Amino acid sequence: MLVSKLHPMPGYVLVEPAAKQTQTASGIYLPDSHDEKPQYGKVLAVGDDWTTEQGATIKSPCKVKDTVVYKKWGGNDVKIENTEYQFLKFEDILAIVK
Image (cartoon, rainbow, N blue to C red; front, side, top):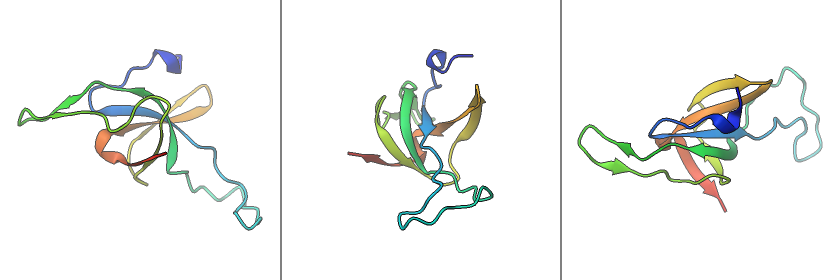
């Protein structure tokens, strides 16, 4: 399966999380057991606008190639060809990095 062929469902975006940091800003190397996942990444695909049960239309807060910050426990992990991706709801996106 190719990532470029994936199109998220309405209300979702596909994000490639940033690589795990192996070193802190002060130069301390983190052990392999350190499994803190990054909470930001690059948007690869955006689903269509989402329509709520009340009929309101919610547009995506971001676009393809944006770098976004998202909730720590948000999204669903999908592993494709040894790379982990995240499907996130529009509401899980906290900020766009400018």
